Length: 287
Image 1 (cartoon, rainbow, N blue to C red):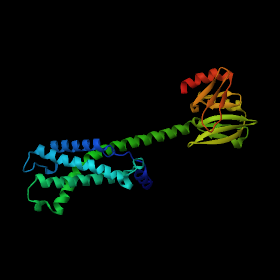
Image 2 (image 1 turned 120 degrees about the horizontal axis):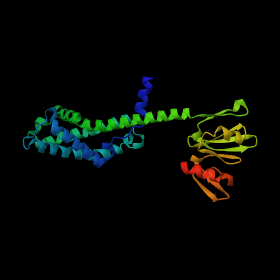
Image 3 (image 1 turned 30 degrees about the vertical axis):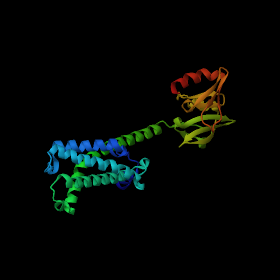
């Protein structure tokens, strides 16, 4: 079970981080958040350069960081693995963030050659380079964590809503009785499109994952109407038809009767003169 949960977490759709999604706006917000955080808390022994005060030093570094972010985000979106926002996942999110933090760390390393001690040889080594990457990474991860955490919260809320919705669907299932015990039908009434009499049988046309399924049981249309009478949006429009009003796209006709439009693949469903008032009253609540 834990393995399945972990698999779902890493493979399901994950909303793209706003700071990555919006190139210019995201770069500005990221830079400002890093600047304000560093200015207030002075983390990791950050200090002014030998030429400028602390505030101006941060501004110069921030300009370099902004340029790095603004140039790197479009490049990330050109990487095949990270190019499709609609197929964004948590691993892709983490990969993109690591690339951006690396880019920002490189920018601070290069800017330091300009505003720090003039001896380039003292900075031109792997230890100083890794130090720049780690320091920037520890500061830069904070804005990304804030926006990713927001997406994680929204994702779990949506999952909870979906689970609750599924529970509600199950609890709303109705059981249609046939004159033959073996033909009883269990169905979510929200998915009923319409029901049509066919001699001694009744055909149910049901929406199933954007497809229309047909199920037939032996019974009369009047008996089926009685079984569904507790559902106000499912009404009898004709002696041979019952319709889910929520599924109706449009109507045409006059006081002599209507023809209902539901789908291009479904013929016009009639509303007899005697049922026009009922249809108008019910459709006014749901359409």
